[in-house]
Image (cartoon, rainbow, N blue to C red; front, side, top):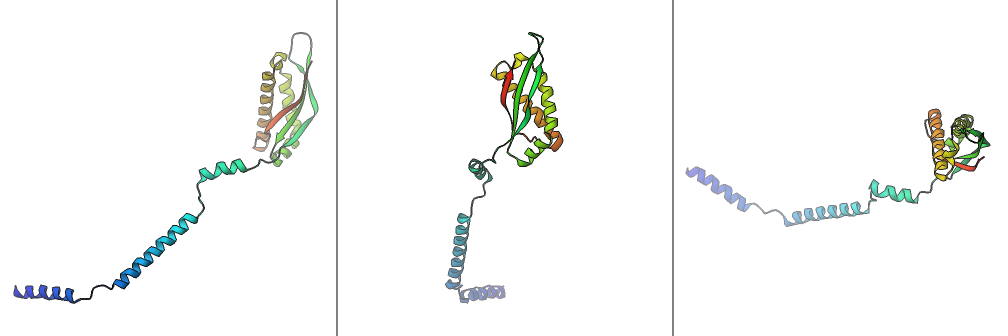
Length: 172
């Protein structure tokens, strides 16, 4: 056992005799780590933010929509109204289609005969009492736009027209 005690005594003396680590090495390592952390901090705070939720509303508010383009369906529509009172009644309406997409405007021009046919059928089903007030005219305008968009979606895959406007509206 004395030999084992001598070995532990010798290893303890070796540890004491060993040179302690150089304080210069420890200081240099700490300086390198601090410089790296500072560089990462500068890089992080100078990068632009990529928050999609914050940038989209700002971009959409500042973005100007494409200019509106109008296409008039000429000549004006003239149809007999569906009426059993007071003899025949007539509706004359001028229609303008609006789109902000040039490709959609070309599709509207191309399919103008089909659009006219659909709107002619729709207008001929109207009763005079249905369009006697503003709300009735707006309902007719909305259903007309839906009819045009349905046709254009079937032909081109896109609704095409953004708005349908009545630029003249006469009943007799």
